[in-house]
Structures are given as structure tokens and as C-alpha cells.
Image (cartoon, rainbow, N blue to C red; front, side, top):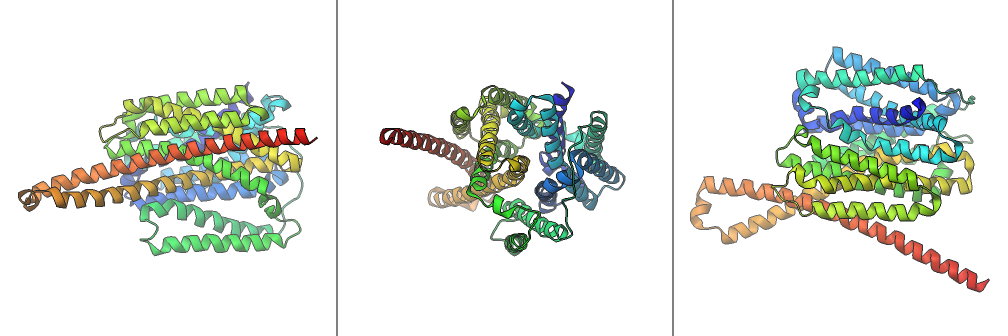
Length: 493
């Protein structure tokens, strides 16, 4: 029982560290005297480190074992947290975010192993799905904490709480150690160069996706250089790894259609979840509300996620995969459609049902998406079971910033589009006396700007709803095609 609790607890707490900062990024940046761009670099540092760690930890687990990785990275995270408490500044905060990103990937793997110890072999995939699903609850749980407690005295509250969480995890891991696994020497000297190239890919990609929507893609030239850097590092890593007999990254395996389909499904899941952080929360924040004012909303989200995880665990099976995905996508589509009816006066109480539905749909979708990938991989090569889990974890890290970048860009584009439309209509209908009044023009301009921003968020909700419906329709179409192909084969035989 203790191991099962650890399996659920570890991924949530590890990810909650970053959620404490990302969910209150504006307040934290203001308290630390950072610009919005500097604050976004902190998110990029976390995501880049998490993606890189997921790539390297596959071999690291084979050589050192999960326990060594867990204790080492938890210890490093605690040390960087203590440094942040002693010398609070942008540099120490960024270093702490990097250590947290490195730690999260190993903690997710550790959570999986703890659940595997607690459940029989027949429930191994369910254990992994529960660990991944519980990871989604980190954001709403972290948002329940008061903003003032975290951001006071140059974010001293955040530094102390994050460090305490890491230290508590380290103590629990030492008190409840995982059994030793078979290890052997798998790292080679050339793995160092591979790691540098892969680090370049993850850092450039995370920075490009995170900062693109803040600095805007076409307004900041160096955003394009980040994309070029991503492509160059990726090409160099691909070429170098393809020439090696024992590569750090299994290029041939990762580039198969099976893994690519699995990665697309996993990224779609994470993209849909971004409606919550980039859409609903953004709309409420634009109305001037802080996290402290919608704690009840997050309780409903957590309730929906718990219900989705429970339903997923009770019904998870290979035959149920398409039906679970369809139900999850329809729940997400309905929730987004409900949110699309919002306006500038929408408050958290108006979104309880829709956000609970969204939480239910996203956690229900995680299990089938993961099981789909595991089934595809096990059909071809059973030795890549654990590697598949890390691929899924990578898609969760990259998918989160991809979803935020996409939905944030859609919101900004339609906000500008609506503003242009409002301005043209105003010039045609406004009276000359109103136009000549600077007070009247300023008042109307502010009102139109607010309404344009709301229109942008409504288009985000509409996009997610249509996207989820299209995905559900695609699954139904695939099911029908497979059914007719099966009938045709039976008739021919």
C-alpha cells in the first residue's frame, strides 16, 4: 500500500514544483523584478532539462539503476533549492528550474516502478497509466496554494516550499527504497558528444516554443535562430547517432511509424489539456482575477481528474481503447464548446462544469494513449517497453509548451483580428464629437481592447472543441474501416 501511494505521490510532487512557479509566473516575475521574457526563460529551462533527461535516463537506468538516479537528482534539487534560498536571483532560480526538470523525468519513472512493485504483473500498464494520469493533477493542486505565501520576499515562499518538497521526497525514497535491478556498463565515451547535441536540441526547441508566443514569432529575429539551432542540432545528432554501433539514442527505433504515431497521439492529448491553462485560466486572468480567487474551480478540476483516472483504471483494456478515446474527446469537445459561450463577465463559478469535464476527459485519455503505444511497441520488440514510457514522458514535456504556444498564438492572432474589425467599425459609426474627445476615445479603446482579447479566447475554445471532435470522428472512421476490412477478409476466406 505504501509503495502504491509513493507511485502516485512522486510524479505529482515533482511536477508540482514547476507548477507552483508557472501557475503564478506573473506574480513571481514581478516580485523578483523580472520581465515577461526573463520569466519565460525559467519555463524553457525546466522543459528543456526535462526533455533532455528523458532521452539520457534510458541508458542511465540500465547502468546505474533507478534508485541511484532518484537519490542523486533529488539531492541536487535540494542543494540548488538551498542555494536559491540563500542567494535569491535570476541565475540561481534558473539553475533550480533546470535541476527540477532533470528530477521530474526520473521521478515519473520512479513512480512507475513503485506502482509496479505494488500491483501484480497483469496490471503493469495500468500502474504506468495511473502514474502518468496523476502527473496531470500537479497544476490544479499547486494552484490551490495562496499566491502571497509563495511570492513574498523575492519568492522566498516558493523557494522554501519547493526545497522542502524535494527534501521530503528524498527522505521517503531512502525510507522506502526500490529493489535493485540488473545493471551493466552501457555508457560509452562518445555518449558525451551525443548528450551535448541532444541537450542543444531540447534547449533550443523548448526556448523557441516558450518564448515565441511571448516575444512573437515574426517580431524577434533571434526566435528564428532558435528554430534553426533546433534543426541543426537535431540533424547533427541524427547523423552522429546513425553512424554509431551502440548509439545513445535508438534512431532506427524512434523513427519507426509505430513510435511516430504513438508520439502524435500523446502530443494531441497534451495539446487538448492546454485549454485549461492557456484558455480558461487566461480568460479569467484577463478579467483581473488571481489564482486565489478560483480555488474552488481547481477543486472541481481535481474532482474531474480523479473521476477520469478512476474510470480509466476500471475500464482500461486493449479492446476498450477506441471507446475510451472517443468518450474522452467528446467530453473535451463539450467542455470547450461550453467555454466558447463565455464573455468578459464570466467568472470561475460559470466554468465549474466545463472545467470538471475537461479534467475528466484529459485523464481518461491518458491511459488509452499510453496503452496504444505499449501495444504497438510490444508487437514489434518487447525490449523497448521502458523506453516507450520515456518517449511518452518526452511528449508530455514538449507537448505542454507546444500546446501553450499554439493556443496562445491563436488567441493573440484573433485578438488582433477582432481589434482591427472593431476599429474599422468604430471609425464608420462614431460621431465626430466622440472622436474629438480624448476621454471618449480612450474609454472606447480600452473597452474594445478587452472585448478583442475575450474574442481571442473564445476562438481558442472553439478551436479545441473542433479539434477534439475531428479527432473523435477520425477514430470512428478508422474503426469503421477496420470493421469493413475484417468483414471483407472473412467473406474472401
